[in-house]
Image (cartoon, rainbow, N blue to C red; front, side, top):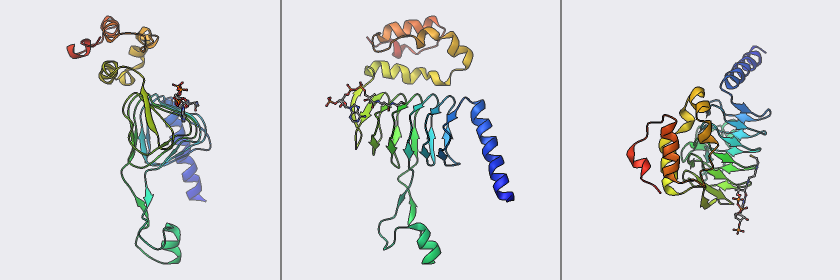
Length: 214
Ligand SMILES: CC(C)(COP(=O)(O)OP(=O)(O)OC[C@H]1O[C@@H](n2cnc3c(N)ncnc32)[C@H](O)[C@@H]1OP(=O)(O)O)[C@@H](O)C(=O)NCCC(=O)NCCS
């Protein structure tokens, strides 16, 4: 009983913590307590999130499944509960990991996506609905299908390099609001030079390398 109350209390404190950082995780989701979720990320429908890191400002649809572990396939039994409770073995048959899943910042994940162990999804990437992501996806790539393949990039390589330098998701709210013009610019129709000029006018300190694109 006490355990259940302590559990509920922890859950309530965690939800308040998420709310204060503008994070929304849909009711009915199961989130590993080690998972880290960045500010302003929204998981819009119930999802199953294993141990992973999700960046800030991500738009995540429903039924996302993030798995950070596999079962060991070399033993006769592959089911961990039976291995411990029925067979009485200390030899783990679950928990094998190719590495933690890392989802970058400002990523859009469509509905019903599965992300498998060891995958990194770069900043600004888009994962199409129903995709199974088995390999890492580069920043600002659009990937779809099972297994997910990159079908295009959202922007030119130069624009992507600029955005990777700008890292707007780390700005404070005052800076974000003062930079509204940047967020209202369609980057797929602008040149890097135009965007660099705009950012400098807004007070951003950019290295010269970022101004070299066309
Ligand atoms: C990934 C996505 C954004 C791409 O949109 P788009 O840029 O307009 O791409 P297109 O529709 O032009 O499709 C390009 C190609 O990819 C294919 N494709 C697009 N989305 C796909 C998907 N989810 N799975 C498999 N293939 C997909 C198309 O069939 C097309 O293939 P073709 O070139 O052989 O004809 C979109 O298809 C998608 O999946 N959106 C997610 C919607 C969603 O889940 N919303 C929930 C709210 S968060």
